[in-house]
Image 1 (tube, helix red, strand yellow):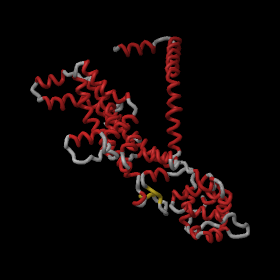
Image 2: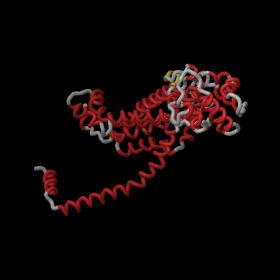
Image 3: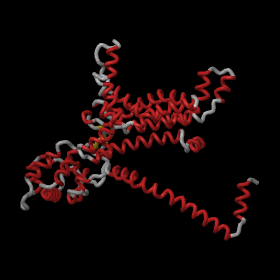
Length: 420
């Protein structure tokens, strides 16, 4: 019988009082562990989880119509036909628009409807200028006389759709999708499709930066792993050197180096390699240079931590058995570095996807990534719903990448392989 089985048998055969004392001691130990992690858990909850959750909720909130036209929205719930709503719905809309006239509520109503269909803001503002309506006139005839658009059922369907407390409008818009007049999800018109291209650009630029960081960082990490300690520490110092300089300072330094009259162009001109300055700034080249400079240490460090633990005995044994050096490296050494490659690639790729400062300062309009539009909607247009929707798309992509990494390289890899 094994030691574990013997211990379990001894506990099972113990008297009840001993079992109670052992359970009490186990509870005290668990409570002590919980008390130790409670401050950190509260900090993560308050400073990380709650802000992200509250922002993501804004991606599906629909406040403009539901909060400012409550009676009209409630009356429209019973309407779902090709004919126009009845006189009561027209009167409720006219009265609520008259109450909102001259207040921020009217602007919120008009803005929300205009996001559903361009031109509805002008319709709402034009209608509000003719309100309130006399009590003895037909609200239906009066609104249609103000603008014939009120006599078209699609306008009312749009108003009903925009009146729900929650909506997928912003999430669909973040994927260049829209809801047509029949209530079906469809691609937005070609002139309005923006975000799929931006998302594809974000992935493509992140992939290129990650690949370049891997190609540059792998030899550096390998050299650090095989060199003596004193030389390895010197190389580590150079790898960590960028961490001691502000990101803005590094970006400003690249602007000085890469501009038309910068040091790089002057050097190339003085050597006779070029006849006129090369356009190396405010394009994708400068963005790649700046991002690689900042993110390269995040690739080198995970690779080095894994390579340092790889014993050189395996490669030596392969060489002694006649395997060529290049083949020994790829078949014996490289597979053992895969966990470091996976960690470095995941870390750099995720950080690339959320980059904002470097493309904004070193790139042009065609180099802006998804984070630029999130900042645009947050700081300039104050469209928190759209900013939250784009953030949700970016967060979902990040979580999917992490799930792939966890299944392939993480602790769940063994369970996943056993399940297959």
